[in-house]
Image 1 (cartoon, rainbow, N blue to C red):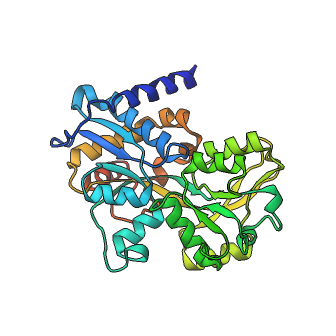
Image 2: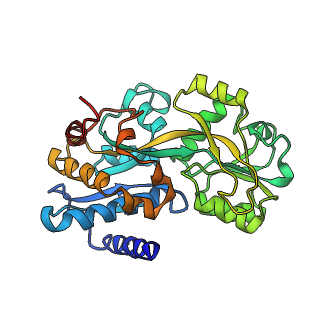
Image 3: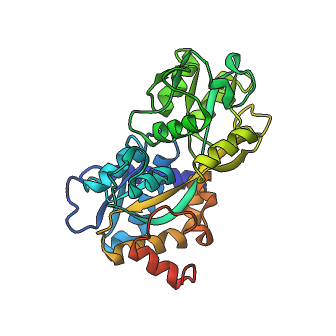
Length: 329
């Protein structure tokens, strides 16, 4: 029953997208940028938007609507251009954009602030069984087949390239790079048009579930990161740590998957009113059970972890709430 209610509320949130238009002058009709619909960002973004609208529309006239996007890379641009008011971002993109490093070398983009840590973005490098040799990331070296690295400009592509670089894998030489979103990647793997895909998100990932269910657990593998691969990655990017996807998370997945993860966080425009962001932060943490019922990834969210690992400064509204709760001093 709870699940049916949650799904119904999500549908209601989608309905809010009609008529949103360009009215954001009062900073109360908010747009939340997420990612493609086959991952975790989108359903969680819709859930957050639904929660905000349900709790804050009547007394405070604050509503929020989630939209899909190409992911973290586009979301940073949307925040800068005020095409979105809030967004879900990978820690890697947030850190590099704010500090002007990586793909943002010498061109820092500081037009966003942190609201809360959300959950860990778990790496899923899926590969069809016939191409699996070691079961680790080493199988992508000299693969020589078509492999999807995510939509161009997406957080998926950006984080994937960072990982490949740290592990000595060259997407231009070791395989033929395709640029597909999550669901199209899964469909292309099932049709044999590509042999693998990079699908990072909080488990269970819908596209990965689809793969395991339709291709079969013995015919598809989410690659492990060996201890040596983890060490090399962590040396280059300390934000990634070991993450174990327990057996049974996906249909026919019998063994644990020893992969890696980085944090995701909710960001917002720095010029949003302090009271608006305060109310949003308060609403999220006073209604975590609502989010937990929407997607399992949000089970990682707790008030005690809200500020851990944030790669950019807190918005004053979020900071006010965390001070009240004794999370920061």
